[in-house]
Each structure stands twice: as structure tokens, then as C-alpha cells.
Amino acid sequence: MENFQKKLKGENDTKLQIFLTAARLFAEKGYNGVSMREISELSNVSKPTIYYYFGSKEGIFRELLETGMEYGVAFSRKIAETDISAKMKLVKIMQQQFRISYEHSEFSKFFLMIFLTSEHTPFVEDFKKHVRAHKKLLLNIFKEGISSGEFGAGANPDLAAEMFVAVTGHFISLQIKSKRKILTDKLAEEIVELLFKGLNE
Amino acid sequence: MENFQKKLKGENDTKLQIFLTAARLFAEKGYNGVSMREISELSNVSKPTIYYYFGSKEGIFRELLETGMEYGVAFSRKIAETDISAKMKLVKIMQQQFRISYEHSEFSKFFLMIFLTSEHTPFVEDFKKHVRAHKKLLLNIFKEGISSGEFGAGANPDLAAEMFVAVTGHFISLQIKSKRKILTDKLAEEIVELLFKGLNE
DNA sequence: TTACCTATACTTACCGGTAGGTAAGTTGCC
DNA sequence: GGCAACTTACCTACCGGTAAGTATAGGTAA
Image (cartoon, rainbow over all chains, first blue to last red; front, side, top):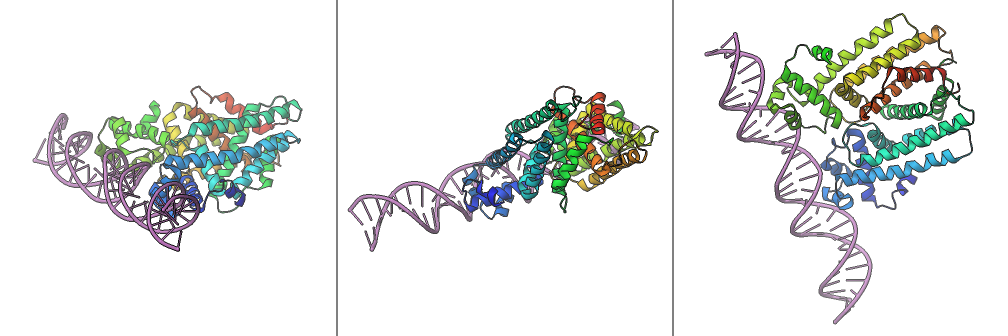
């Protein structure tokens, strides 16, 4: 979390406090379920202080969204560019996502909320682009695996990428709801193994 | 939809209208994103009429939830009890869920919203029980498949059931967001086939 | 050194509008 | 007349946001 806090561009303590409180509350209750009054009280600052730093309710949400998108995008790219098997890439990407969700749970909750929600949240089109890019990156890994002969030629890469995203998000969601640690590197391996070998083995 | 409307216990037109409007709005904007005024306006009834029929905002939500849980539970049970292979059961359950989500899209959206959301919605503990029962049913099908030798002894039934749920919900979610028809019986077959055979074929 | 100015970081008190809900009344049917 | 199914008008509390003010630190001119 230390590195992550530094990611917030040298912001001062008050701004960070508001930021993280808002992330937690939005994740927990949804955008419309959280009032500025509540954020104010739980941050121990006055409401206009929040407006001083973020301009509006949407402003907080936007900054949370942008920060998280920046943070998340670098890791998957790096893994996709390494010279390892397609299968190993998938394992590592899933492991990385599990690790982030475990270590940065409030922020991870926030992101999962946006990914899954039907609630009207601001700037959701930006987020959709981000998700599409991520799916494309996965799709390319699946295609790579087919080209190299690692995955069978009959495998449908679109379907596989979609399933990968579904399963990753779902297990992160389970972790968030759980009191004990569910997400492990081993679980990511098991999931990818099951996707790789199927149920008939 | 006709059968489904009849499911609403011979309710009159006004109540049904409120009900379906609320389902749509809750699904679209989340529980906290929808006001009683909005439901009233879009139902073309006054706000106290809603209170006359449902008692409170939570009352609408509860009735939507209960109705949907009753409706959904019978189908999966019936399929699980038929004398077909475990794999076929999975295909049929997924197909059934796809079909429901396509034919009863507003209500399906409502259910998906609850399944996925982190937003605080009323009565969510009831719903969690429902989801747990559904997972258990799937788990039993997977175990059945392993006992009968249909699935490999190395397959982890808990993991497989969890993945099945994740993928089903995810594709229903894609359908809801999409303008064209995604969910087909064929897609359900493909998904189960991929889970069955894996990527290495 | 002192007085003043500016900028930043905060505050209290307040605004207009809307949230969920209710009291009292109306309409139409039996 | 009674009752079910509706209505208008209203209630209190809360919403996102703002105006005006305060406190403090740093800089500058006299």
C-alpha cells in the first residue's frame, strides 16, 4: 500500500484520507448510496474541504477511476510482453490481479464495483474502454497460444478471453465478501489449469 | 412473458405496471439510484398508490426479489432431476438461464444487479441463501459427473461450480449490455464444451 | 522589524431541490 | 354506506453544492 499511496502523486494527507475513504464507501454502498456528508464525516474533514480538493462528487469518482486505471494497466502489459508461454502469462496476470485485490482491497473493491455494477456511475465510458483494452490484451495472449500450438486450434479465443475475465472478476468478488484469504497464486494456477485441461481429465 | 405475468398471482394491471417499471429501473440504476417519484412517474400512478400496494420502497424490492427467486428455482431443480448426463444437465441449466435472461430481460437485469452488485440492497441475505442453494445444486451435478466417470477424478468440483456460475452471470451481463442477441443455446454448448475439453484440444 | 498582501487549506452556515413517506380526501362499484 | 383504489398536498430529513469567513505561512515593501 505504501507504493500505491506514493502513486497518488505526492498528495497531502487530507486529500489522501478523503480519497481512500471515498473509495471504500463507494465500493461498499455504490456511488448513489454514499453522500458527501458521509464521506466528510468519515474523513474527518468538512464537506467544502472535499469540494476544495475534488470539485464535486463526480470529481472524486473520476480521480479514483483514473488513478486505478493508470495503476492497473502497467502490470498486465508488462506480463504480456515477457518471453514466457501463453499459459504462464495467463497464470501470472491472474495472480497479479488476485494479489492486487488482496493487498489493495479497498481500491480493488471500488474497481470491482464499477466493473460489475448496473448502477449509473459517472465516466463509465472511459472505464469501458479500459476493460475492452484489457480483454484485447487477453485475446492476443489466447491467439498467441493457438499460433504457437500451445492451445488447440479448435479453441475459441474470444470465448476463452471472456471466460477468463468472468472467472477472475468472480473470484475477486468472492474474496471481497470473504473473511478468510481465498485468492492465492495456487488458486490462479488451478483455474488456468482447469481452463487448459478441461473437466474430462 | 405471459406465463411470467401470470406468476404474479393474478395481480391487477396497476400493481403489475409498478412492479415491472420498478424492476427495470432498479436494474438500470441500482436500488439507491431510483427514487419513488421516478417509479411513480414512469408507472403513471401517484406515489401513494405505490405505498398502497407495496408499503415502502423496500417492499417493492422485496416482492421483486421473492417473485424472481420462486420463479428461478423450479427450473434448475427440474433439470437436475432428469435422467441425463451431468454434462447435459450443465448445458441445459445454462441454456435455461440464458433463455430466461433473454425473454424476461427486465427481470433478469434486476436479478443480475443483485447478484453482482456491491450496493447495499435490502434483504440481500435472503438472496445469498438462494445463490448458495444454486451453487450447491451445481456442485452436486459436478460431483455426479465425477462419480459416474464422466468428468476426470482430478477435476475440482467446487472450483468448477464456481467457474460455471461466474461465466453464466458474466455472459448474461454481456447480453444485457448488448444490442444484439448474444445468448444462444449454441453458446451455452460451446461454453460447457470448453469447460469440458479445455484449451489444449 | 513591522505591516500588509496573497495564497492555500480549511471552516460554519446556508441554499434550493429532492428523498421516502403520510394525511386527508375523492371516485366508482357493490 | 362501505370499501378498494386511487389522488393532491404536504411533511421532515437529507441531498449536492456554495457563500462568506478564518487561520496560517511566506513574501515584500517601507
